[in-house]
Length: 234
Image (cartoon, rainbow, N blue to C red; front, side, top):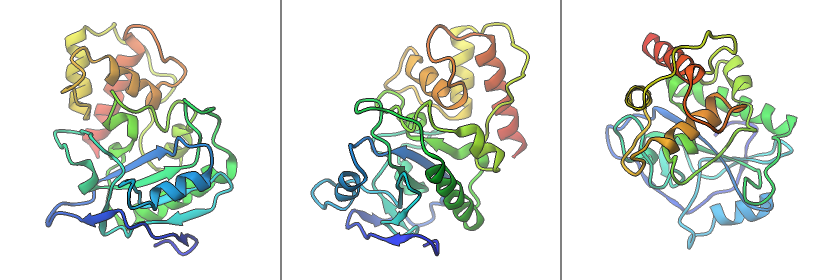
């Protein structure tokens, strides 16, 4: 547990399967009206949801589940051929009411605390940069968090995750087949998303937040190619 985090134990966890490495850092927003509501739910044994950490808007960080244990935050999810994201991830809930309750920017104290927490986690868990993800990445038909207002570029500048440069030259617009192929190569799943529209929306929320609608174009293709290259390079 990071030294500056506040203990707030949740009963909602179980053991990780033997031999499964922690190789995903998964970021969420709480999607509730207040931090108290979110913390209460994450600690409610009847709710059967939790995360390893929760970061309030003032930067206060709560430690809910030990990193060695399996928290219940990803739900029905998929990444890179794996369906049990909870078993291989550390989950961080970031206080924000979310799209349904008044989605807003993530304030400076909160972003600073998230960066500090992620740095601490990555110093102890060798999670690849391309596996620092949002909940919408692993559950694109169900989730939108942490969403387009979350400052993914700032995290990447702090060496937490990946974010493509803004000045990439556009490729030719991809065919639907090529887009699905490359999104799948990066990790997105399509079991409940036959058209790939949800995966594209999730990709854009994370990697192109200023362009959330419309058909896939050459900038999507260029950013996805950059991400695939960065992931392959390690």
